[in-house]
Image 1 (cartoon, rainbow, N blue to C red):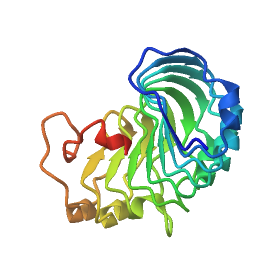
Image 2 (cartoon, rainbow, N blue to C red):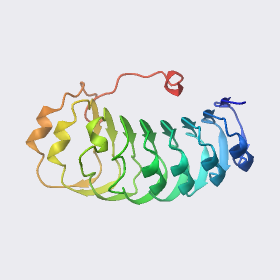
Image 3 (tube, rainbow, N blue to C red):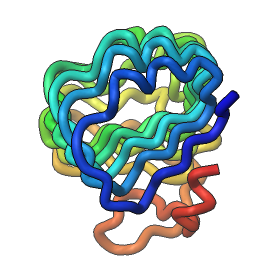
Length: 217
């Protein structure tokens, strides 16, 4: 049975085959940094053992299928730097095991669902995209912000105020909210954050350098 499919950093063309959904034992398909195009096949929802899905840095387009929500074991999802469009994928809200989610550099529109992340263990979230709208993420009991160490919502059209309880995110070392439409005062509770020293133009806090290959593991 196939558990790992590693094809990253090649020159692969064309769409992701629908038949990939037949590999029911697959845990870790690594397809990043190719030239794959077309839409994400709905058959990905059949891969219920999937824990890691790397699709970043391709030319994938179209909507993110709601079948993604069937991947309850999914821990890492990287779909950034593609040409994906449509509204924020509500199916992601069903992926209760997500730890790392990156969707930056796409054409995803609309608002972030209120229940996004409530049941997850998210620590790394990057939704910078230029197209998301609505109010800043609202913290609820058990919400995504409680465990976050990296939050990037830059280059969107988010409005409203920065929630005061963002200051309760004791693990947060990187925060980038630049280039939005946020208003009102900066909450005093932000002074409780223990962010790392920042390089000019990099947002608030500078994440530790991370080897791109190590990040796949």
